[in-house]
Image 1 (cartoon, rainbow, N blue to C red):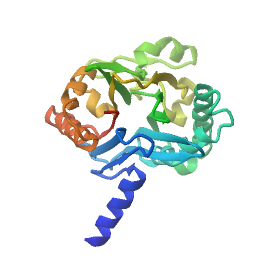
Image 2 (cartoon, helix red, strand yellow):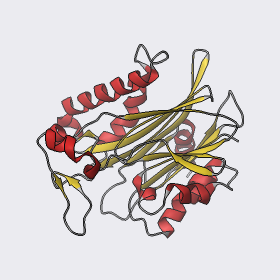
Image 3 (cartoon, rainbow, N blue to C red):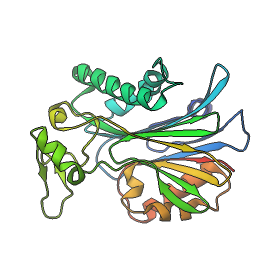
Length: 283
């Protein structure tokens, strides 16, 4: 038992969540009021947990970075696990990360996807969505995403979506221009080539000709009215609107308690998917 507890504490410290249920927390050394907490719950599907997350404050020279991400895999866990281990390293290794952050993130996403495709023999034919958030010196938040994992900010009690849901119907023209098609079968969601329910993702080598891994990137300045940010996989957004999610946790003072409460509410609303959630609080 002592060994299991020690392993759990180690995972919490480095902010890695990947098993059936993980929970953890952390805080900024630069601003004691900036904290994060996370919680994961395995879905009811007949497969291993395919959600992975990353949540960690990191000192880089004279700067502090908060690094947060949700990776929601499909057809296996290898690619979201790879992303958790490598994507932020690739972003921070970009030479113009500090001067042209948005361009650096876009290039790192492309490089990471190319590497995943090259390693398809080892990583499998699956893929993963991603939403990443980099908090620079507790002052600037840079959010990027591919797929339908989502980042939502709360300012003065009002929800603001920072990411873009990459739905096949919204990107039908691009998919068809690449030689693919979007299916809309009765009783099912729209799918690329009748298979994938998102229009952008890492991996998915068999569909890559018709899929993009280009992220949408948004920059948000953290001011006195910024209360918290939610990052979560679609296991939450399938059963809750942005405002409902914000309202669900706005009275929770502790970030980990907020993340846990949000996942529990999604389960209570009959979400059967894997659920991963990170809450970053600024007050």
